[in-house]
Image (cartoon, rainbow, N blue to C red):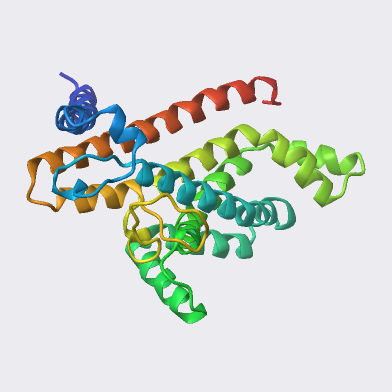
Length: 283
């Protein structure tokens, strides 16, 4: 048999094996969480906050962690989006394509993306001490926004970079300024990809535990203000899984199942909205 055909056949088998391994691993994780979590899942767990003795296996739920997670991830994604839009527009409209400045900024964003979330948590903790802020919902939102900011910037940047340069040149030729082109052409053309990037950042924010470990605190109550501590699903899993009671550990897997469903629903929603918004865009 020809050597090139042998190499191609071997690589094809390896690629199929790698794909099967990844799919099997994902299925095994979901199956394990589902088997352990389903038996602890109940309506009261979704609709109640922890009662007395909850962490000893008595009644109550994790409504505080579900609501707290949406508060933290939603607020952080909103803050990061407000900061990321000007950065992305500067890189793609006001900087020359391929300029050294843009390359340096993208490199720094990549470095920030690779920084472990626990480092952002430690930095956020020091920042809170410096301004006299205690562990609270606001502290969690600020820290998670720093964590998702580089992710959001780079994801949006890759989307905007795919816009044909001819489209921008056409806008300039019609007399539009760079700002008008950025707002009315670039943002509108990339809206589907930007929405996908926002939902991806939300999914990363709601699933991260390390960045909120020191900054958001933990409470059995739903936070009523930004200065109150807030529970999150990752920390609820961490604390419940650390107990010696099997019933409480099963609740940790139920919380993990809820978190997995939220992330999965966010991903499916981003794909569905992305397809709908791209129907009327200029290819």
